[in-house]
Image (tube, rainbow, N blue to C red; front, side):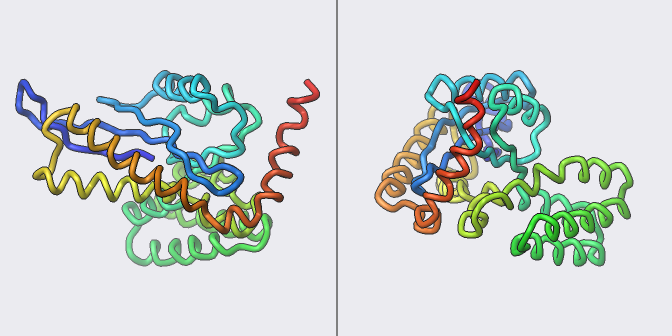
Length: 244
């Protein structure tokens, strides 16, 4: 999840943007884990994602099933290189917001109905049909946008391979929304920005520590209920790796 925060430079006193990236994992028992967080001034790049994912590997991340992210440039390519067996799911909520910002009210009303259907689709064939209609709506606004969206269909629909109980947790990056909300509250209390990067780092650490303690005590029951099915998916995904 990407959170943009205002940070005052202690020397120039000017306000500038710093990006905070947080990696959150959900294990097969439904327990959430903060895997790491990183700061970036400027735009993200393939080299930046390579550095982050390599850091996750060094921290012990070896065989993830699924990455759920926004559509960051270069990230899909890096995931395929470092985690060839993992799937990459693009966030439907971010896509819906993109539609809302680009389309007029009439077209967005049609798109919104398609997004609602996507979340409750029964099978892959139905899901692909709905997504294709979204691509057609996008083409009415911009032909190239619709074509590029169609190329990413498998990434947006990767969550359908999981049990129904799990899909609501992985169709978007909303699992980390509580972190975002907490940080926004801290920013408000501090007058709209963090006065220094040290202040930002301390507040992020406090917010994450409090949430992690709460998550350890209460795993997600809907995920825990299908842990056996998830273990079967994991075994099926990585059985070829074991052979090789």
